[in-house]
Length: 252
Image 1: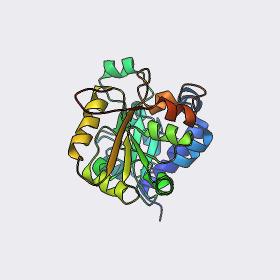
Image 2: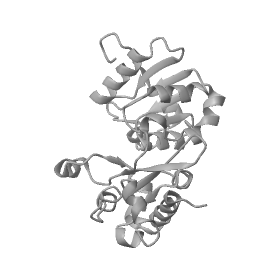
Image 3: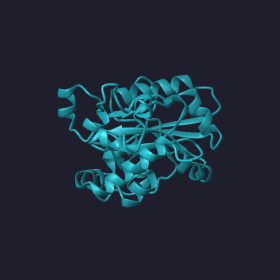
């Protein structure tokens, strides 16, 4: 039986195919492949929330945090690029949405880059359902922050990659990954929040039985998504450009 969430994902995915500005952003500005769009069912949230409720239950949209009780939606207004979130078995459980607004525009409005429907970040890792076979084969996993980081890495052939949908890496995340490998390479964003979170992960997991490695990209790149926007960057370049991080008081 089709769920309201699956109906919404299908509508958003079809909507992206028909919306020029969304295709230009995803395929052009973000340089994702068509395969990545299809593989991840990336979509474009409808601008007309009233028309959407002809196909998806308004009550469900409200309970999921996708529609306000006055009938408006921040997803229609700001958070239009949709990334479905799947559990380990490939069942849709939520959506994560990204704004197309610039950093300056977001700062004026006072809104974050991403907004999610209701789900437990601490219990789920973005892309694990696609990456788990590769993780088993490689016996290593890369952990990055954002959905686009994971998708860009996967697109570049680094398919043993998951994202924690932010800087938080929980005990439940560790338990999930330990089913597949005991080697975890953490590469969070090149900013203060990413550095602090990496150090926190290091301190919390010193004696957990999993081998953690911490790496970073060159300073001119904020994250993996930005790195692979640099035309011509390959998996070989990526592995060559990584720098090992140690926590002896310095981020080196």
